[in-house]
Image (cartoon, rainbow, N blue to C red; front, side):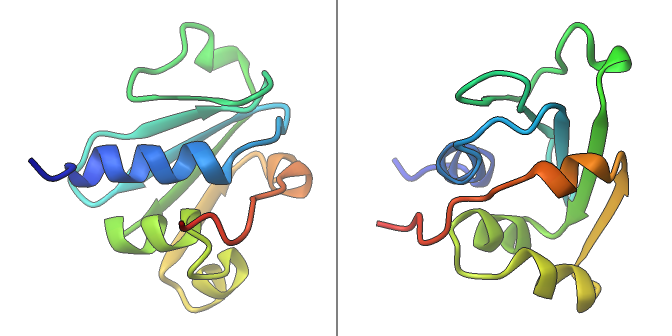
Length: 108
């Protein structure tokens, strides 16, 4: 059985978000349920459920097509390139973006 798009994105995100960044990122892909990355711990936790204290934590929201988010997490597309081209929108606490260090070349 092949992986679902949501599980494929979660697996790629687990590799890309390897370092803590002091907040939460919510990935919103198309009509799929959001994926939460809790970068307040090391390694960051990747879940489909909102953290209990999400309302009190710094939050940054990424919105894009599933394929765009997957390619960013797999290291096949630069985050800045996706943002500048309009394929990715980012909202919320931008201090999270300043602390974020995505792992590159995560595809095996």
